[in-house]
Length: 449
Image 1 (cartoon, one colour):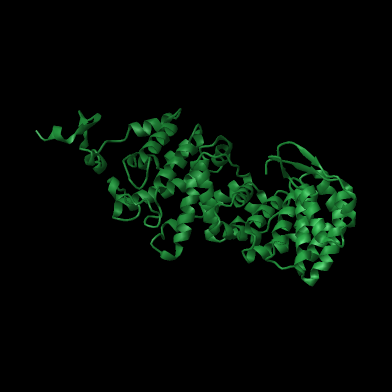
Image 2 (tube, rainbow, N blue to C red):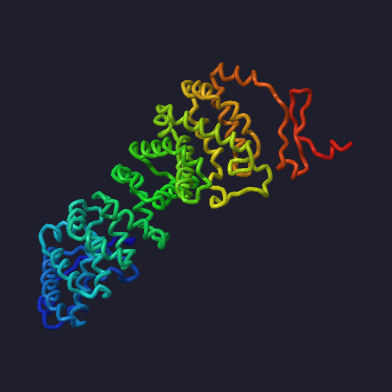
């Protein structure tokens, strides 16, 4: 909620103290006194301690009466909580409520005895959200006393927007266990427009505590997290993965090679998709200065990526399978349900190229791993690996920069012919050698004379 900057000071009138017998009069007074919309402006209410103490007394009184389930008492309780909600945007009010009143205890009693479908419960959640906003002490208090209540509401899909907002604000100062995290992810599946779920997941990605239980998550929840990271990378949106998270992602990648060679097994498709996304995340992360130094300290990343690329390339040449290059644009299988390793070779080449950026240890290791000829051989259009040619060129550039050994090795390779590109032929073009040294793209018509 955006405030205009104007502060509305609450003044306590005499009859406010004499409304026990007239709930409707109290309701009207509360609505007028704690109104935040007035004269086209949104006000920030500054309530005195006297006003808060009186609200506490009325709240306790009418909560006790509400056990009789009379609608008039539920209505006045709702209005009292609405007044509290509207005035808990100030830290001194938040602190006073938590440290000098029994309002939270009264609230606990009310939610145990009230009708869960009544509007009051929604207002209570909004009050708690405002109460803990940017307030460490209040957040810890509400977390310890109301977390189970919020979990129960989420399990029954009640007031999910308010619950997700409350959980997000609690997560800023308190650790979130794996069960609550999975509840939020389950909620994300049906409410992907809920901004507080997005805020919560962003917070988790940058949190060491989250990464401590990442491996325990179910595959579908890992996919949600990895998909979100990949989306942010593609959108060039800034986010942070802590060192602990990076180490977890690296470890998962290093343990993944066996999965790729079981892609025909329908029972592990989620795992294949997971490690494919994981590779995409790592290849993109390796382009960032704040991560590349950490990645380059681990030789196993380059060794694993090289071994995977070599084996995938061999498989692609051995017959028609998921790794076989598609040189017709119409033959692309961009749907991962059809080809779960879509883009995989391009991601591996990007990762290898970035790992070798200004790092001779990695450049020499790539040569020893015999991956350089494979990268050169991949430098052909493949509709299942978009931009693979560009990543090949970039990788060769990084491999050769200030490394005479790699330059010499590439210079000593023999050309064994030109690979025909069906993609070029679709546009009426082909590749032609000139004097055994030059390579040109020429119209097909020019060869028909």
